[in-house]
Every structure is written in structure tokens, then in C-alpha cells.
Image (cartoon, rainbow, N blue to C red; front, side, top):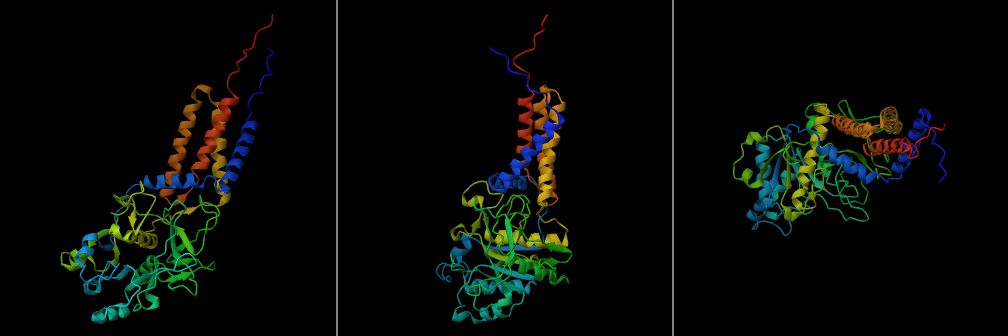
Length: 414
């Protein structure tokens, strides 16, 4: 059979052009959201690989467990988890313990019972108390706030989940619909954090772009194209949620049960000067959410809503008081340069090295890329891992296939 003409040798220009073509192709499919699912899973993986942090001692959670609900059965209204009697006792204990701010992450869309009018007075006059409501829209009737709590002491409990149900974003504020049953403009977490900071003479301001600023920290909202998100529903003031991981997503904050507090088993000093979050962790109430740390679909793989709000409060406080980084992305042009830089660099190295070690070069490059993305995430920068890894694999595979030895060895002609 006729011998095909020899393939022209690989040159620098061919490697350069190939890297540009590969990068452009990957950027296009990235912008079409075809890689978004993989990129978000990679983000979750990197979040799980970050080192453990110290617990946040500024917060404490009073959790209402299944046993706590059972212990209140004689006083509970149908479908509720915290009776008027228990709430009154709890608020009195927390106020006498000089809790800095109290967040009631339990919906109460009903008035206090006639026998507990002093609870109504507590709810109305406690300026260190923030209660929750849930905004209503076309698809959700929402949940009204406690009638006794003034409007300025309300925070919404709404959260934003991705298509896979995972909470990766933190909704700080939004403008509620005038017809909404919940008129709160700030999230429960934002309200609690701002009140704690105001006590330290750090007051909320807004930049010229109307971004929330606390101290020196500007909370720049997400846009439609942030990190791995493309065509994101960026309503309201959303930022990424930089979870504070200790031994587990729940262990970053000290937790005590309602019964322990009411029975005097907790030292009152445990609440002094702290933000106290009150919420339900009983699985029967189904106030659980998927996070980047969820390993499965069972209830034990999810995080209670009150702990989720604690993560959000901690994120704000840690950013302002501890200079803990918020998660942010790079400009679009920088991400393109990042992807192309990996593609071109690996392409040139593979081109110049021996074919026998090219596989090792690719594995080393992927390891360095992974470590770089993890290290940058620790510093608060979310950079593209999946498109960059694909660029490395594709350019490496192209060079291996292009530059492989010819099956038709040259013969010397005498």
C-alpha cells in the first residue's frame, strides 16, 4: 500500500494556535453552562478539602430537639415546636444572662395565647430580639411574622438553593414585594450580625454602587456570571457562603438544647455578650438543607436551618472583625487567561519533553492545578478548576497523538 505523506513536525506556532483554539472552545461551552454542574461539584470538593477552623465563640445555638418537642406536648399548638410558656421562659433567661442579640429562627405567624400576654410584651419591647418571616411570591404564600414583633426587628428566613438543592449562596437582603406577608428587607443573619457590630461602633453604610459595607469590608453582590455560575438568577443582594468548617458543618458553633437551658443546666455566662440563635433541629420539622458538605440524600447528611443561619452570621462577623476572606471570583478576562495559561504551558512542556514522560507531566500538571485552586480558595478566590483541567488533558492528548512515532519507518534507499 502507498505510504502516506509524513506529518509535518509539531512547532511552537502549532502548539500556540492549538492552545488558543482549545481555550476558546472551553470558554464557549462554559458560558453555555454546559460545565456548571461539574464546576459546582468541584467547588464542593474543594470546600471539603480546606483545613478545619476554630469554632466561632461569638455565637451559641439553642436547639429544639425531638425530646424538647415531646416535653412540651401539653402546651404546644398543633404543628408548632416551641410553646408560649417555653419561649417566655427562654427569653427571660437569655435577657437576664445579658445575651447581646437573640435570633428566633422559628416561625410564629400567630398571636400569643391570652394567658401569656407578658410574652407579647417581651416580643414587642425586646430590642435585642430578631424574629423571622418568609417572603411570599407567585409560587410561595410565605409565612407571616409574629404579630407582636415590630417591623424593624424582623429578618427573612429565605435562602437561595442551586438547581441541585445545595445552598452555596448567602442572601443578605432584597426588596420585598409590597404585597408580601413578610416586609423584612434584611436576612435574619444580616440583622443579627449588624446589631452585634453596631454595639462595637461599626455601622452599615452603602457604596456608590449601593453595595453593603460594614467597616472596611464591602459585600460585592454576585452577578449573572460569577465563578462557575452562568445566567445566574442574581436577584437581591447575594454573596457566596464561605462555610466555617470545624470537625463538621455543625460543630463550628456551641449548641445547647432547650431543655438544658430551661432546667438550669447551662451556666448563664454561656450566653453573655453572645449572639443566641434559637431554632429547631428535630428531623420531624424538616427544616434541613443540603450544603457542600452533604454526602448523601438522607436527613443526617443535611444541615439544620438554624445552623445554616449561624454559618451566615459567622461569615459576616468573621469578614468584618477577623479579616476572614469572603469568596469572590476573578474578572472574566482573568479566568480566560488562567485557562489559556495552563493550556499553553502544559502544551509547551509536553512538546519539548520526551514522549515517555508526557503522561507523568500531565499528572504533575493536574496535581499542581488542583493544589493551586485549593490554595486560592483558602484565600477566598474561586477560580476555574474543571475548564483548566480539561484544557490540560486536551492539549496533552493532542500532542501525544500528533507527535507519536510514525507506523511507517523511513527506509534508506541505496
